[in-house]
Length: 311
Image 1 (spheres, rainbow, N blue to C red):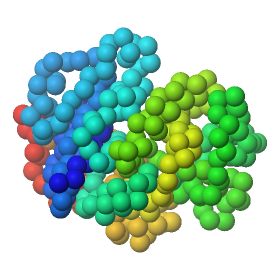
Image 2: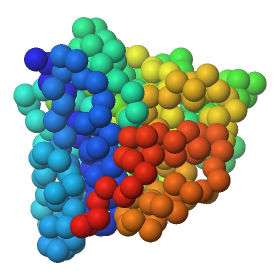
Image 3: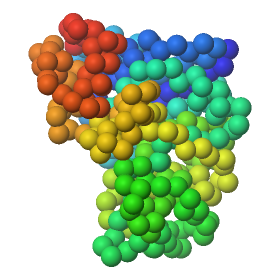
Image 4: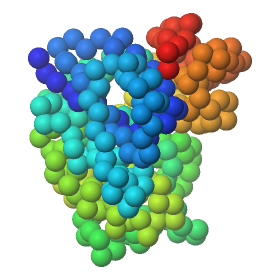
């Protein structure tokens, strides 16, 4: 049986524990056919033994890695994010990295098979350009932050997914720069890309207007430098709860495979699974678009009754 290792970085807070508990339920309800999934969690930050003990029974059979206190003190939340690349299991044919605020609702087998058979890295292109500098094109922005770091040419052959098609190409076009919420890697090339990413990310921290996106940028540069084959997945494999996505991709929304509930305009993603009261409140919200469809699938998969009472 083929194996896929699912890697999720997180902080040991009730919000993250609750999201992962819901994600664990979602993963167990999917059809995997001839694939065997394993869940691997990478935590970093202050450890509360009581909170961990309450949520541990709801994390399934997840393998848990804790980053060192020294590394967390030095680089903060990047420690557990880096550990995804530093400590990935070796006994899987495909590595799937997920953010904690993702919720798969349909089988991923077709992508897993494709990634393995064609040896490609797969993901959905990022929503908006990065880096962003006032008055500078996306291409020139990338040249600015990569100068003296890497000389690998970037091919601007993709379009950012939440920018309207009529947006001028100098603003819309991008290299293979993925939204990091859902990314598939063949194991055969994962280590090469991971090592490059770990080396590149710290060098970008002081160069980018918003360092929160240095992980995504480092991954784009690492993939380009590795020469890996790539494929851009349709939005359904990483659909954000965003009204712009609803408008641009109505057919993809109807067929959404993974919801990425990263927007917080309608609810707090860190709280909806954290308690029975907040879960009931979320299920009763009058939502629309992708939020409503996400809500519908949460009720279908997790249930109308809160499943984590002892947490």
